[in-house]
Image (tube, rainbow, N blue to C red; front, top):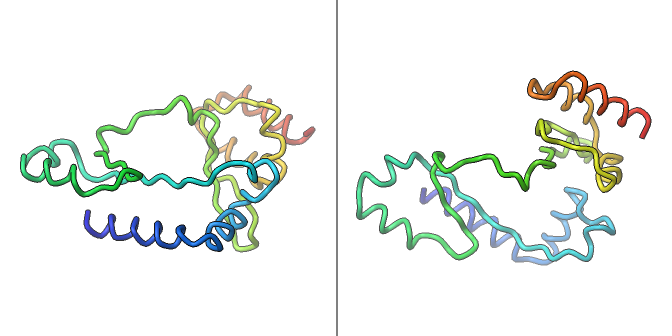
Length: 150
């Protein structure tokens, strides 16, 4: 856990420099007009171990409560649950050319007009939709139609 907290401290220090925040936003295409008015406030989540391991030693449980700053949340893998607020979240990565590439989509993804701008800069969205075994074929066909005609 000490190594993970050290990594978070490095990220905080790096993102504490305004020039680096602008670099981060540009890298992930968050410098577009729609994002310019939003406040950039990183939050950190540390997922570590299992509940049984965390509560096995009462002194360790007490110590863990004092290890984190207010902007760092820690939890065990046992607490992970689907989040309805993330039903539209597409997992992306930046490829070697600097383009955003869709890696995966949730089966709950719905077409909304606000997705049009983001979808226009996102590559491989059809492949990510097709790869999701939890999306029914009729919905995949709809998404592929929207992608082609949009």
